[in-house]
Image (cartoon, rainbow, N blue to C red):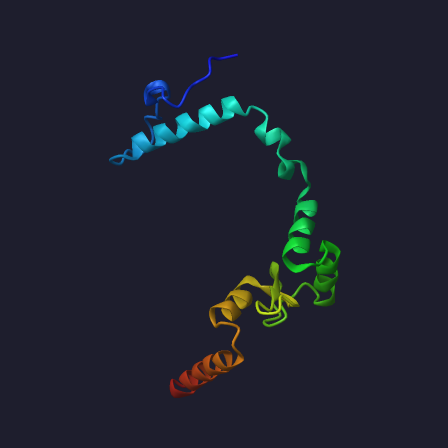
Length: 146
């Protein structure tokens, strides 16, 4: 087994890659980061092989996430996708779907694409603001003959 590195040893223990683009101070930062990574992996050699999340399948991780965040199982999300024909509930485009929920009550609403889900979030989930935004776009199109 190689000798244990200690944090108090000089940072010259690891040489930086000469092909890295050198920016003032960046080389020392990379060297320091690599040094501490090496120390960590020497102290915890089995960290990634025994870590709980790396042993779970992606489906199990998703199921845990949905249960913790929304209180529903992965099967419920899959059933909702089927009922929506794998399409966003707003724009009806086929895309990766995300759970949309009310931030005040935590109640699940539907599955939306990233764009629609972000749009609702950026407009503060306020129906009045959403209507004003729609009216703004319609008026602009009428004024410009589109």
